[in-house]
Structures are given as structure tokens and as C-alpha cells.
Image (cartoon, rainbow, N blue to C red; front, side, top):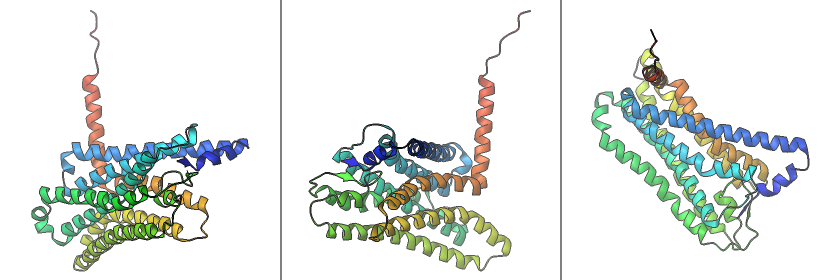
Amino acid sequence: MYLQYAAQKAKFGVKHESLLTFYTHSFSVLNILIFSTFGNTMIIYLVRTDPKLNTPMYFFLHNLSFSDIVYTSVTIPKMLSVFLTEVKTISKTGCFLQMYFFLSTGVTGRALLTVMAFDRYVAICNPLRYMTIMTKKLCIVLIFASWGFGAYIVMPVTIWATQLPYCGPNIVRHMFCDHSSVVSLACVDTTRNGIFSLTNALIAILSTFLLILISYVCIGKAMRKMSTAQQLKVAATCVSHLTVVCISYISASFVYISYRVARFDPDVRIVIAVLYSVLTPLLNPIIYSLRNKELQDAMKRAFCRCTLASKNNRKTVPSVA
């Protein structure tokens, strides 16, 4: 299957300034991939090495960062390869594998955000029972449930898409193997396939969003009984998670709406989808790092450990009398 950007690059080659813009955008996407991977890897490292971050909340954040790394690694490297090399094709198997892992990690990320909302609900509404409720066993079960939910709910959609007949020319009008863009290449009527995929997407998005909403409604009710100082403390602990939730669900809504509007410009739709797949994993570590004092302190401790280790390993040359 050919990616649509193969044809667009030829157009960029007509004018020098367009070619320069093309490579500038590619460089920007590469930088975003690097910073996103570095930020999420840093969170994973801090949670796994700092004893003070050994709590359920950071255990869930650790998994969210890992899902974001997988999410970007599935699409962006191939996207950059299409931009910058002469290889503009992807095998049918590779295309459907990319589609599956992109969709499943996206759903898993929202399931993890739901689990994190539940964790905040227990910590705020049942603080005295928090450690007895959020046991290690329950945390592991919730993590497996999140990854299992993402893996299971997109599997029927992907399998059904692989069974469709594709007669050619098999040019995907997208920067990666997006489900709607690939299915539109089939030689048969795909109305039922589209309805089924939309239903699964709504289940994945609305079910997780409703659970998050219920958690924060309960938190809001509990905050009404608190003092102003306690309310500010609760708000400070929830603002990072709420910000990530808003960015994730608003951007996902724009993507799904763009596919349901017939007159929507395909090029604009592609730009929205690329921004959605690139920026969301980038913003997550930035938001949690800027808004979370415990993570900031953990970064300082990690930096101090690295500084002390480098000083201890530095070789001293004995002076000659």
C-alpha cells in the first residue's frame, strides 16, 4: 500500500521554498518524537528508581507514559521514513499491525486515565481507607484490565478490515494506516464496517469518559464539605490529570468529527490526525512535570545522584613528588 505523501513530495519538489517547508515540518516532527520519548522515559525512570514515587498514582502514570511511547513509536518513525526517504510503501501486514497497535494503545491510554481518576476518587473521598482499597493486587488488576480493554475492543474492527478485498491502486490518503482511510480503499460497500467501527470507538471513548466524569462528580461533592485550604490542595492534585483528560478527549472528538463531516478538507483532516497522534503524548509528561511537585523533587534527586556518581567515578591522577 502506498502512502499518499509519496505523491505530495513530488509537488514539493517543484519549488525550493516548498521543499524547505517540507523538510522543516519533518524536522519538527522528529524533534517532537525525541522530546516525547525522552519525557515519558524520564517519568518511567523516576517512578522505577525513586522510592518516594512508589504509590498507585505514579504506578498508573508509569504505565501511561509507556503506552504513549508505544503510541508514537508505531506511527511516527514510518511517517518520517515516508517524508525523508524514497521508500513510500508499507506491506499489507505491516499496515494492519500499525493500525491495530495505534488504535489499541490509544484506547489503553484512555483506560489508564480512567483508572487514574478512580485512584484520585479513592484518595480524596476515602483517604483513611486508601491503602486498604488501592492494594498492589488491585493496581495490577486495573493495569491488566486497561491494557486488555485496549487490545480487545479494537481487535474485531481490525480483523474485519483485513478480510475486505482491496483491488488497487491502494494509495492511503493519510500519513499512516488510519482505519477509515484504509477501509475506504475496499472494493465493496463498507457501510456496515464503518458503523461497527464507529460503535466500538464510541464505546471506548464514551465509557471511559463517563467513568472519569462520575469520579470527578464524586470528588466535587466531597470538596463541598472541605475547607478552602483543603479544596485548594485537592485541586492541585487533580489539575494535571484533568488537563491531560481534556486535551485527550477534545482532540479525539475533533478527529472523529472530521471523519463524519463529508465536506471536511482531507488535507486538514490529515493535519488534525497527525497533531493528535504527535502532540498528546508530548504534552502528557510536560503537564505532569510542570504541575507535580513530587515529580520535580524526584528529578532533582535523580540529578543529584547522577552528579555524585560522576564525581565518585572521576579518576584522580596522583601527583609526582
